[in-house]
Image 1 (cartoon, rainbow, N blue to C red):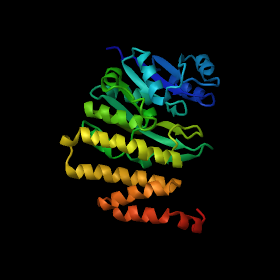
Image 2: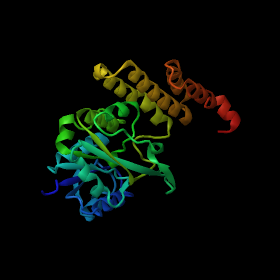
Image 3: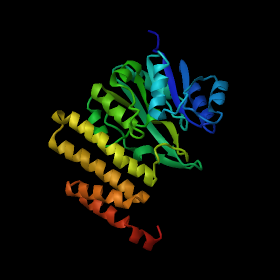
Length: 300
């Protein structure tokens, strides 16, 4: 049988500094992808020209669509059976496609482990503290509790992506988490435990990870998204599962907000997690040590 065709979709906005690294890492795969589509999300720099010089097909959007809209446009522009996502900041390691493509036989999408790098190039270690998703047909339950799938690690059948509705452009953040849950509800997730992706933090990151803005977005956007999935699947979830999902999400989001400086917004979620009985000691300790007076006293 012929191998299904693979298209790499790279959303890019003002990514001239990193687009060459991303495209080159995709083209260096053995065997190489059948197509690399760079979706230029109304950039004001040389992103499109650089991508064309590297042999990528460039789809230039006339107005900014955001990461979700750009990825959806890239998928719509190809008829390849398999879609591989790669963000313009990130890079694949050799062997990624060769190890992941075969796993799609019997799975709806496949992901892998990744490492995170700081702006200065320092390796910050495994993404998600090396936590991995539960693979198989019940992966959606674990993904409701915590996200352990990075966009640049994912390969998905195009027909499954379209059937699930693609990325939700109404979500400026967590659009990836939302889609992984919807895909996992439809079929099996496969996971390669090897690190096959290097992810790079950049100042222009849309997610705002590690900033008060990013923390507030998690509270305002991610938590309601998770609640919608809980409501839609309540009949399939036990009361204990719902408590665990909420408790873990509230603890992580609340703690993240407190550590980034959005203490007033984060503390209520830590207290809610504690009242739910989800690791109350950690929740209360985090609330105390991140309190502005104590942080000022300790010079943090």
